[in-house]
Figure 1: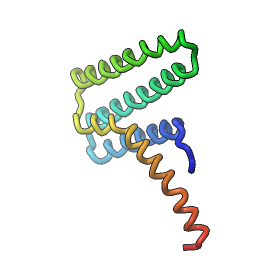
Figure 2: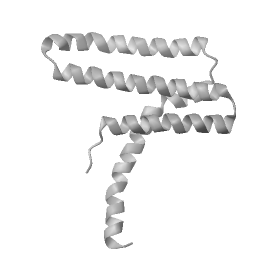
Figure 3: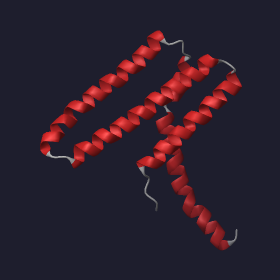
Figure 4: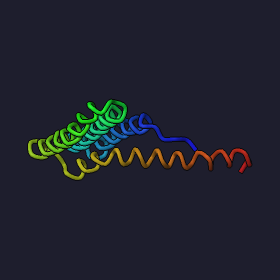
Length: 130
């Protein structure tokens, strides 16, 4: 079975950002919905990428750098919470589209896992000719 890589999840997440932004603009025909979805999705992509760097550096470095890892995680969470609060307070957003944008990492992980589950089924179907 294929192992999911972080790069696959990031790629799918960016694709969801682009497709979701286009669909929100075409369906709702309002920039506010596009802005809400795109900003929330971009925040989650940035959060995922920063968390990846923090964890990679935390596990691969010496014990001295691991102390910085313990400090970096709460700081990252505080920065993420601040970004979300600033956008909610000062941005003209639609809350539903903002929440959907915040869930893009979950959607990317779900799509990746469904794809991994479907690969053996499709290979078996090609082999049997059914």
